[in-house]
Figure 1 (cartoon, rainbow, N blue to C red):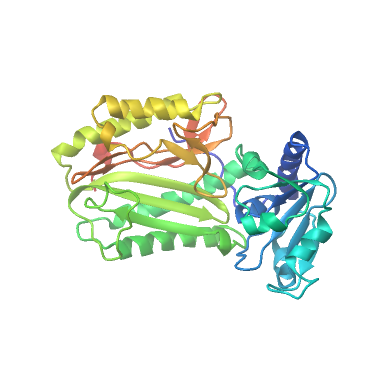
Figure 2 (figure 1 turned 30 degrees about the vertical axis):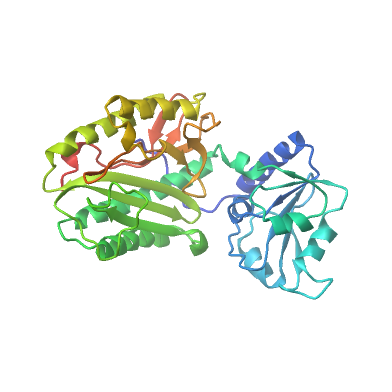
Length: 386
């Protein structure tokens, strides 16, 4: 299922960023908008290559129907933005937060957007910012929609992040043995992933680089959103579940594997096999034109038909891109339809209290006629006994 896509570590070319802006403007035409306001840090990064932490000082990317986009930012951030922004923009600055009347971010917004214009805003825009935003507002998530289908450049960046998580998993497997401490697994796994990214990416942006390498030991593996303690230890047998994620200079991937140490308890063989059957069906079903909800329904039915319906805790998958959790959602309640160059996880799971959790996850690319995994690791039971 794994296939090699050429990894990319270079920053996006200007044309890539301009193409993203053009996608948003096409969606603005559909909604008859004069301006669109991007405030979410992920969306501003997607459209500019500029990552930041706003704290109390808000940032706004204002996209007019034509002409240069405008960045409304605190004056002290202009030099930072100029180092990273890859789009031709005009800066509209404000003094501070809080600031004297006439020099606030509200003043800057009001000077940028005429009051009578139709303005699109994100659903995540804080209520306080909606209340002061000029114009006739429409809540519509155009940048999120533009991000759904990835360019070949984005696929290459996620392919590189997939290589990074593969490095993390290899290190975690190397160190996994009875009584191995979470602190060691996490520290060494993260160190190897971060070291790879820092050495191979030119001028990486650490504000959009995050790494996790952890193992849910048998006692926690049926609780996938619990948090292992740093001094928790691995146990003989299993299942243990390794969860390895990376955002490598702004592009994300994950790989997860259920594995065993020294032996496989007999009662674990059936749920492992059923989880793998469900996973295999997902790979068969994922292709352009298929509804995400239909994939999830069919995959979960495999688990239910084998008697584990009460041991389902989550959907089959989620999207990747700049973040590690974004649309499309491979879930029963999703309206998303798969298209070529979408990126998703495939990770159906079974969670049995007192026995453990059973789940593999891979970063998967939707192709012209199916899908391929960008992450590669052992997935057969006999290869997952360490």
